[in-house]
Length: 98
Image 1: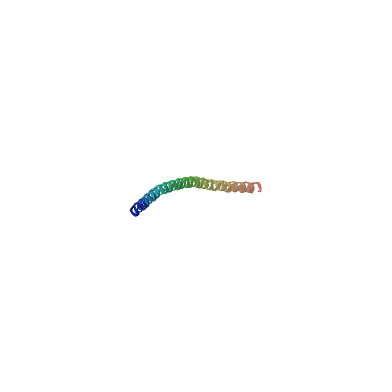
Image 2: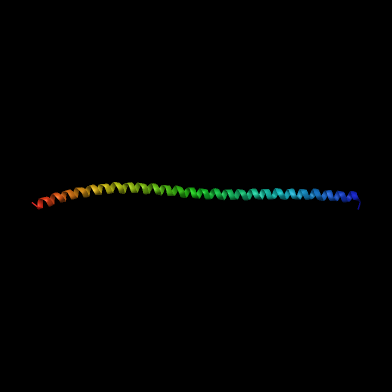
């Protein structure tokens, strides 16, 4: 083989190697992009689940607050009725003692 043929074969191999390397890079880049997209989608889905859970907790907390306020108002009414009952008992005991 002549030096020219060897040089041409070497150049062709170098160019072919560069092309194969570039194609491999593009394929890997696409796969990396696909994997990154899947990862982002998974993260966004998980964030959505967390947000839904927080919304559920907020709704339950609001219901609990409403129940708490209702119990407080009912307790105030019971205390008032108990005070009235004690007043009546005190008056009745005062009459019996006479």
